[in-house]
Image (cartoon, rainbow, N blue to C red; front, side, top):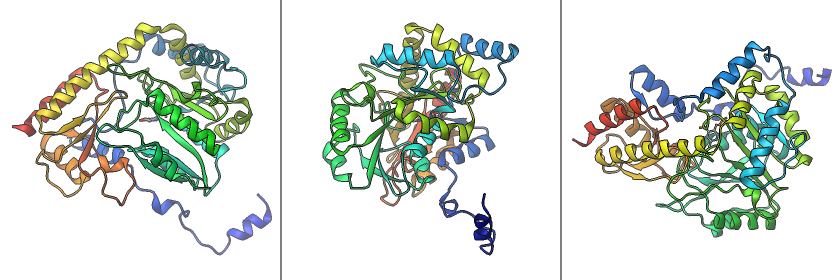
Length: 401
Ligand code: PLP
């Protein structure tokens, strides 16, 4: 810091940053706190408290005992970077250099933060599909980047390419594609992604992908990464992670794959924010990636499809109209006719919690504020142990009767 920096600060007084007054506690965290306080069943937060695969758990414990408790290389341990490169090659047909094009990040959240710092400037605009994942918008806002919502069409959350084009201005630098998506469970089709790829190429945009739910697919849904489409390799920042697949949301291990020319700056900012992803957990995730095969991922999808069915039935019985998701593990349900008290979705979510002990998130949390959107929706998470989900379904039953 130079002398000038110090003197500039003098006389301004103590106070929050320009950004801080706009910070509000996320509705998801607020409902979780409220639910804990009254001992309810929390279907608000996507914590997925299902079993951690033994190989992953034991790998992390062994790593700790073997002394892997110190900083790793800033982009992650070699074994995990290699395993990620192999996975990306097998699933997406992408050739990726594990030495230069893979970052083991502090969750997909850390990956996005570092990538946005490396590639975007204040005032840039970034398109997001609405309903969106709030962290994407807030992360951008924390960098003074403007998130621009492009509405997906209800009831099936179809993509309107004309609306995407209409949202583009000279300030547009990128789009965020979350597939399968939170909260809508939308799995973008290859045709939709090709449409977006054409727009990205035409307007020279980066495409940040969030593919954290890539293994949670139901019915005929197929996951396609935008990175695998023709001409997209250079402009796609592919992000995913292990939080959801291995049920280790608290471990903070995810990854980012991108063209080597962006990686120096992305790694730099990731190092600055997180130094590295937790060392022993990187080892546990490497063991998981190396040793768990197709059967594991197929079973994960089947188990969650059953949970989805259970919750869809319970929501219908409670008088709600669930949008049945093709992927991820959330259900957006219209509760307009469920008889909940309150003027807003947030109030209705609190009424639901008070009456049934089941926490959900107000749909409005996933839409741009000020347009009244999402006020008739609640989001429920079904990545829960069967006994907890059954208890939640039983409690929801009380609402319909
Ligand atoms: N991306 C999406 C769309 C999510 O829903 C979540 C968690 O709810 C995350 C990222 C967080 O991922 P991570 O735990 O890897 O930071």
